[in-house]
Structures are given as structure tokens and as C-alpha cells.
Length: 238
Ligand code: GLP
Image (cartoon, rainbow, N blue to C red; front, side, top):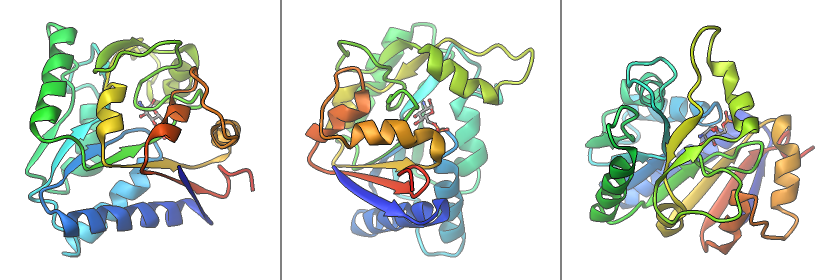
């Protein structure tokens, strides 16, 4: 696991955008794994800027998102579908974009279909990740055992609390979600995790103490051969 510490959040976003740009240059029809949360927004803005400037052409690339609340209407302002439309897809043209269907009649069938589509695409070339304050990646919450494939997750208390800031009064916050499983994440050829801000200091310290903790999903990534964690000084406790 490679650790890159940048001076500022803006530097984190530019560093990550360079990795995306190189990926698309090397393989225009890349399969990209995308993430939500506050942290990737700056990266998406930078990708929009470069795409509008004609510096990157995503039109042959396909994307799969890591997760989605369940159940949630696609049109709900806090669905990850809405998030992606607002922050990236309405401004950058991809060959195809795919997010778990938060309205699926059968969530388990939706998970199986999702995994099959990623498999058929040949797996993820470049996977973007964030990290939850409890060490979750995607919505793989701390546990003692984990399904290999995508699954319906009960969201942890700390995750619900951390994400409650997005839901306004009266908006019901889903307590479950559909998440990509470890198998898809581990088969991704390159993983980049973006981390920003002082609320991640504790989890980052734990992540880099040189241990695998079964109840910290992000620490399992030490077993992946190609992970780059890009953080700002704030997240590194500087
Ligand atoms: C959500 C997402 C994760 C993301 C996490 C951290 O829980 N499911 O994929 O990494 O939020 O988000 P933030 O970047 O807002 O701290």
C-alpha cells in the first residue's frame, strides 16, 4: 500500500486526476470504478475541467459505482445515482455508466446481476475508493466475516451518523445499502483511495500501523498488490 501525502485537498484531487488521465491515455475503453461521498467531488470537478478543456476523453470508458442506498428512488436527491448525475455524469460523457438499482424488486438478484456485468466487462481497471470513519470501503461495514460478492448491507451506526448530514429533516435515511463485495475490489487492477480532513486522522493512523484488522475493511487492502492512498496533510495528522 503506497502512501502519498499532498499539501492540500486540491493537490490530492489533481494527483488523482493525473492517474485517471494516464489510465485513459493507456486504455481509452477502461472500466472505471467510481465512488461517492464528499471526498471525490474535487476530483470529479477536476475531471470535468480537463474533459471540457479537451485534455481527457472519457467517451469510450465505462463506469461502475461502488454502492447505492437501498431502498431509495433513483430520483431521490440523496441517491448515489443523483449524486453521480449532479457531480459528474451530467457533464462528462462516458460510453456507459452503471449504479446499483436502489429500487430493485429483489436486491440479491440485483447484486448478482451487477457482479456478472463487471465480470463480463473484464473487471475494473482503476477503482476509486474513499474510507469511512470506521474504516469501511464502499459500504463494506466492519464485521468478522464478509461476503465475496456484492451484498445487501446493514449500515453501521457511525456510518449512518456520518452520512446523516446529507439528509435534511423529514427525509428518511435508508439504513441498508447495496455494496460491491471484496471480490470485485480485490480484482481491480489499481485501487486509489482519496482521504481528506482531520476526521480521518484516527482511521488513517490505524490503517498504516502495519496490521490487518479483520474489523477494519480498508486494512484488508494491504493484501492487494497495487493500492495508492492519496491524502492531504490534514488527514495525515500534520
Ligand atoms: C460513504 C460511501 C463510501 C465513502 C464514504 C466516505 O459511506 N459509501 O464509499 O468512502 O462515504 O465519504 P466521505 O468522503 O464523505 O468522507
